[in-house]
Length: 337
Image (tube, rainbow, N blue to C red; front, top):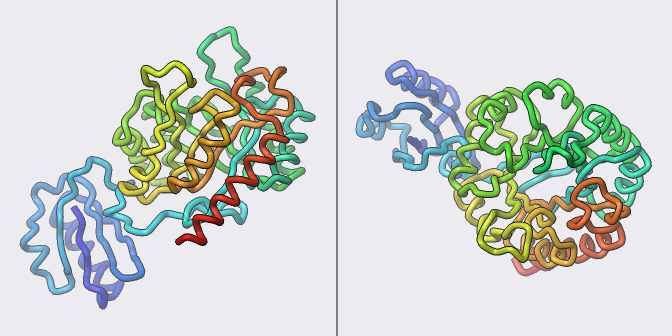
C-alpha cells in the first residue's frame, strides 16, 4: 500500500503518523522523501488496513494498494531513480558507466594489463571472476581467494573499484574489500544467499537468470532489499530461447521495462547475451539507446588463450573502439533530450 502525503507535512507529523499506523496494524512503514511529495510505503499484510480511515487524515493526499508482489524495488514506492555511488562514480541518474575486465582472473600480469587498458579507454570499474561457476566440473573454476587478492592489487594499481561474483554464503567474509558483489544468473534464486547479501552495506549486482521472468528478477531484488540492503543493481544478460545462433538472446526490452517498474539502476551484459565478439558493439549501442545505466563487458588481452569464455571476449583494442562509440552515442542522446 502507498500513502502519498501533502507537500506541507512536517517530518515530525510524518513520524507520528507512521508510528500510529504501525501500532494499529501489523505492517512496516518506509518513508521516501521526494522533491515534490513524500510517499509512505506499507510493507506486510495490508488487507486489514482501513484505506478510508487513512485517506480521511488531513495530511494524506491519496492512498492506493500495490498489486505487484515486489514492494521495495517498485517505482511506486520510490518514484525517483536510485543512484549508487562507488569510488566517486555514479551508476544511475543519467550517467553511463562501463564495467570491463576478463571473465576470470588468471595472473597478476593479465589482470593488471587489462585493468590499465580498459581504464585508459574510459571504463571506471574493473570486473574479473575469482570464483567461477562452470557448466562442466572439469573446467577452470577460478583462482578463488588468490583471484580476489589479484583483483585488489589491480585496484590498488589503477584506483578502479572492483566487481566480482560470489557463489556461496561461506565466502562473504572474503568479499569485505570488494566494491560491488555480483550475483550470477545461476544464483539469482539462491534465496539464502540473497538474504545474507541483504545484510551487507555494499552494492549488489543482480543478474537476471537465463530462464527467469522480469517479475522473478525483481522479486530476487526484493529478497536483498527486504533484508536491509537497498543498493541493488539489476543486470540483463540474455535469456535462453529457441535461438541457437547466439549463446543467449538479448532481451533489450527488459531495460525500459525494468526502468518503468523499478527505480533501481539497470545494466546490460552484451558479452554473455551474445557469446560472439562482433555482436558486442551493436548490442552495447542498443543497450545505451534503450536507457541502460552501465555496460559490463568481458575483455581479455589474448582471448584465444583465456581459461574461460575466451570465444566471447574482446581484445583491449576492440574495447577501445566500442567504448569510444558508446560514449559518443550517450552524448548524442543527451543532446537530443
